[in-house]
Image (cartoon, rainbow over all chains, first blue to last red; front, side, top):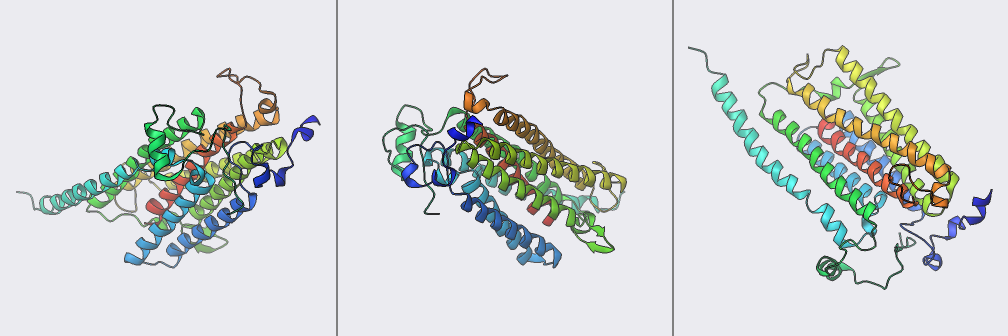
Length: 126
Length: 240
């Protein structure tokens, strides 16, 4: 099998000394396994929020915190954004903030719709 | 994390990082995304547009849920299963979440072995990733079947607000489509890795360009994004 000869010495190629020969994003496998473990733990926590039937502000804040942590780990490590230049990072990560503004607008809109429905739909006809 | 090394695709001179580097990259009147190939930059930009698509789906779901006067169905109960006589709330969704996260882990490792030119491990890990993806789609098909049997339709359902059905089918349907496309891409890339296309620089069937192991990372970006979207769907649709 000729490809074996071409292959780099896998475990050492991620070390600094070999960086000149390395191509693309190379990080130790261990880092991925640690992140993977954390994603499992955070998902379990999210599930437990539902399992223990937590309610109100505690439920929402826990769900959002676990969601944000998981999303951050995936984007930063699995998608390598942590190691990309800021020019790319800002170009990709800042525009989605516009969605949050859209959320704020639609919260106002939805409240207005709900209020109109309560006021007008509950009227007895005639 | 100290062990991780930031390596550059082109062996160009050292560039300034931080905010100064950011301003420099955007104002240099040259390629803005330095150290990133066009393929990777374009995949990121596609993913950004897809973020808006899913953002708008979740946004409309929020709007209909907030504005309805009818009680919203309790997702915890709707997606509960009886397993060996035990009532498990939301269990299928939890398993699907773990399956997708596992596939993301194997994908990240496939990218890593790809850059180390470890052809066999890369191909096997890609196939494992595709298998988990297919498993996820299968479980989603099971979930859809169950809900349709229970009478959930885009225009109504027995549990509560009518908008539940339309939001559910729209959001999970689009996500499932993304996973399915991802599985197909993973299989294509796995085949190419296995055939040594990226070692020999064989021209691609569709683009007639030479493939590189970077393709594995670009496919990985798409796959991780699919997992990322599920994180939001899981939190906002199933748990909320």
